Image (cartoon, rainbow, N blue to C red; front, side, top):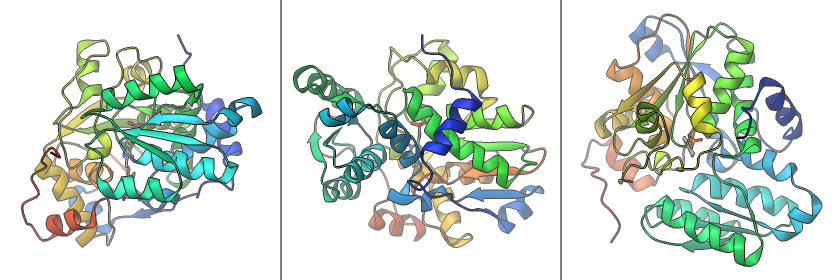
Length: 330
Ligand SMILES: *Cc1c(COP(=O)(O)O)cnc(C)c1O
């Protein structure tokens, strides 16, 4: 059993990634504050280099590798943003990266990873299929696996986001975190509760294929069918052999909220029209949760806008109110 990540691990990560990741701003949303009757702050992490918070964990994990490991190169399965973050981080180090993805990963994310020079493998229709290719490359080519969430250095890196939030909004009563494999939620919750134990941390997933929620309900990691969703970055399982993020989410999250595809679309639309921000589905779930009334607040809240790597044609259709039904790629 890997031990849970602590506030001091996150402080170490924070020192390690200085200069490699941006410290992103937090701004007050007047429209959301008016709506819910408490100050609502947006953590603009979608402006992070590579367009998502994943660079925090990737940079920390790469920095923690030994020279011998760096020379072997890294491999990961990804819904897109972790792969892009790794590709960016290894490029700075002159290392090799192989990114394994399923056919559910949007083309714009694939193209961005390819442009960074990473080696790409497209396998199957799910994160689990992509993971099998990762396992093969670890066995046969000796690459170092850096998974997207279930790894101490990844969780500690994502936790640096929570440290920044508590510096920027010290009186936060609640932090709303997009939730998939739980690397972000586990790290942010460890940081936030380490600094301010009474602050609530709430995870938000899409109703279509919410693996962490199903696992928390079952009391152990379970598999759910992976379905196409507007929040494509939240797709995939948590791993039946989950070492770290399941237990941390179980112990640290105060609640998990599930959103319909329409509620996620409403979040994307609100971000664009009211906040002048372009966010992807996963990055909009905090706003979607407030607009839906599913998240009730008792004081100041911080919503993490976690990424912006949405296909711009899809974004246009959503903000124009056109149909956006998610289909499985043939
Ligand atoms: C990966 C990702 C998430 C979810 O992070 P987990 O650590 O897997 O829970 C949320 N939003 C965006 C934009 C992401 O890329």
